[in-house]
Image (cartoon, rainbow over all chains, first blue to last red; front, side, top):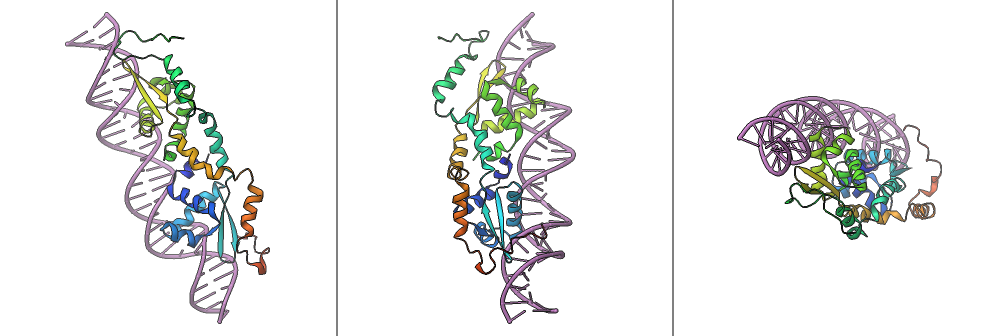
Length: 114
Length: 114
DNA sequence: GGGTTATATAACCGCAAGAGAATGTAGCGC
DNA sequence: GCGCTACATTCTCTTGCGGTTATATAACCC
């Protein structure tokens, strides 16, 4: 799962830049404001995760986006996605079956009215 | 952005467990197979990120899922989502607009040393 | 009140990840 | 060939994070 890869803000920024168009390392280095090895190391992580691909052009390397691994994130997100639409009724209904009322000491089961 | 929160596999597992139903800390501790303070620390991170909420019930605390912050991830993912559907024609079209060094566009694609 | 349960916090440790400097390497132009 | 450009890799350092044990806190039961 590429979650840890995306945990880095710089790497997300790289992906956002590559979403526009492929870029060279020097271009990214200048835009990101870090050292060239720093950029290369982040690109290596992204490459290992399959999120970017390289095109060699003489000494230059054009990094291009490969969004396919992001599908895993999308799939992980899927069972949650319905929730923030119907959260109010669905989750609330769930909570009604739960213990409640902290001031009620011994009474740990509130009676749901359905 | 809760990416770094979700980078932890244990925390994703906690969210998956809470997706079923709210749970107590002891329950999670046993299921996850780590120490109780370990569980509490992860829950603290999730709480600070707004991904879970607590309900006090005497000494117990029922942790419930709050999926709303996941919406940020979904939103970040949005501009990428169309890509893995029409990737082949879209990305390829993109690459055609790139400086591909027309003099030797095809023959320096090999990777002799990586 | 005393003891127990349930959880949080603190203190500490080990490791892995990110940052920077130095170096290695491939391909270009001359 | 030589030097330069563009990039990768290695090394070291430091920081942060996840893990544990030990301790604190709060509410229950007797």
